[in-house]
Image 1 (cartoon, rainbow over the protein chains, first blue to last red):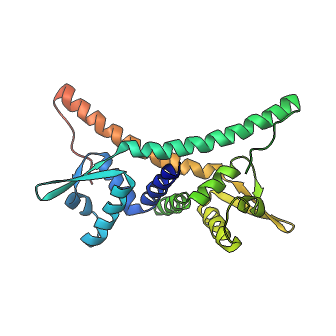
Image 2 (cartoon, rainbow over the protein chains, first blue to last red):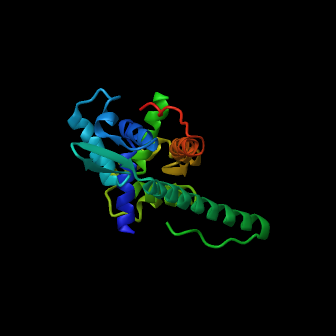
Length: 115
Length: 115
C-alpha cells in the first residue's frame, strides 16, 4: 500500500509538467529516440534529460540503448494506476450517494465513513 | 489550451502527495471542516493548511467560512480533467493501432503523427 502510494506520487508528479505530458503524447504514437523527442523543445539537452529521467523513474516510459541511440517507449500499463485511483475516488462518492439514497427511501442510514 | 495545460499542471501536482490524496478521499464521503480533515495527520496546522491551499488552487476542492469554521467541499467536476487527459492519451494510442491495422490489411499507411 505504501509502495502503491509512492508510485502514485511519482506518476502524478511526472504528468504535472507540460513538457513531460507532450513527450508522453508523442510516445503514444510509437517509440522514439531522445533526439526526436527533444527536437520540438527549445531546451538544453541536460534539462530535457531530467524530464526523461522523471518519466522513466515513474514507470510511464522505459528507455533502452540501441547502439549510440537511446529509444524511449511508453509503458501504457502504468496509466492504469491513474485510472484505478480515479475509480477509487468515484467508489467513495457512490458509497456516499448510496447512503443518502437509503436515508431518503428508508429513513435509516449507516454510520459515516471514518475520516 | 495554455490555460487547460496549466490547470492540469496544478491538478496533477495537487494529487501527487499522499496527504492531499487522503484529504480528497475523505472529502469524497462529504464536506468536512479543516479541523476534522487535519485530525488523522501528525502535522502542524500551518503545514496542513499548505496542503489545503494546493488543493483549493487546483480547483479540486473549495472552502467556505461558516462562522469560525472553514468547511471544505470536493469539486468533483475537476476530476474530469484527469479523465479527459487519460482519454486523449488513449485516443493517440488507438490512432496508432488503427494505422498499424491499415498497414496490415491494405498495405498502405498514412504518414506518422508529427512529433
